[in-house]
Amino acid sequence: MKKTAIIVVDMLKDTLDVGSSFSIEEGRKIIPNIQHLLAVARGNSLPVIFANDSFLPDDFLFRETGRTPHSIMGTEGATVISEFGPSETDIILQKRRMSAFFGTNLDVTLREMKVDTIAVAGISTPVCVLSTLLDGIAHDFRVIMLEDCCAAYRRQDHESIVKVYGRGAMYPLLQAMPLVEFLSTLTPNRLIGQ
Image 1 (spheres, rainbow, N blue to C red):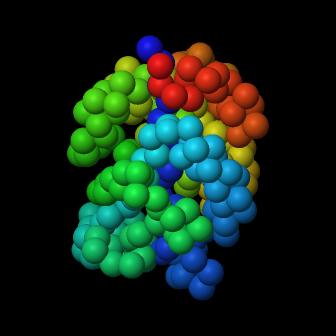
Image 2 (tube, rainbow, N blue to C red; image 1 turned 180 degrees about the vertical axis):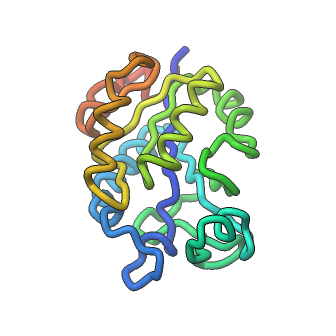
Image 3 (cartoon, helix red, strand yellow; image 1 turned 45 degrees about the horizontal axis):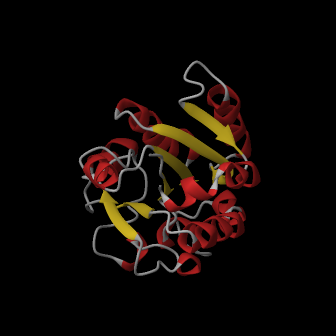
């Protein structure tokens, strides 16, 4: 039995809304592709999981990097952008660190749904997306980076990660592919999880 889940990483109001002090401009460019991905996934009963930064105001990451606090737990800025819903069937997962697996119940949730493959979209490619992909392999899942559904602060950083990991040492456990290619791999059985 094979089943794919979609994980959307950190597509949040604090990181994407125009005028936000922490906005990732490249992230806005991938919104239409992720909207298409979500429509297909929801229309075919694939699990959709939003893995969201959810920090404390005085978090270690802010103290040690000097970065502006953002995506603070319980605030509007730590919620998924309105362009994605989310729908009632989606799972919202709060994460305190980069990987969607670290300190969360994502592993158990995916296993209960009989998922064996995760397709990851979102920001930022070299940090939270990559951490989630690598931890996915560490938890015995096949992982796919949806390259035109991911972004970084700088386009060249995103492209470097895709180049290094797309067909690297972990292939075929870790693959990078454009959305259209990923959607073409979803057979009817894989779509409905049978």
